Length: 124
Image (cartoon, rainbow, N blue to C red):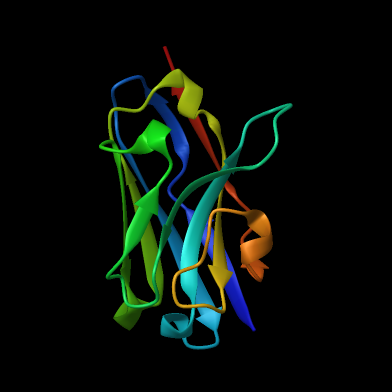
C-alpha cells in the first residue's frame, strides 16, 4: 500500500496563492493516479482535481478551473496542487488520495488511499 502526507496549507488572503504537496511513501508512486478533495465545515467532501499516473491527463471541477493546477513528479514521489486566485469559498481541509487505476475519478470511492489532510483558510 501507499502512505500519503499533505503539506503546504495555511492562512492566505483572498487573491493569494498556496501550493499543496502530497508526498507518497510505500509502493511506487507512479502506479497510482492521484486526486485532491476538500471538505469544508458542515459540508461533504468534494472533488477538486485528479491526474493520471504519468501526469499526462488532468481534470478539474468547474469552480477551480483556471485557478488551480495539478501536477506530479514521480521521481520525487510527490504531487502538487498549485492554487492561485484563492477565494474565501476555497476554505477547507484538503486531502490527497491515490487510486490503483490509470486516471482516478471524481468520487471518493474511486480512491484506495488517503492522506490526513491539510487546512487551507482564505480570508476576505
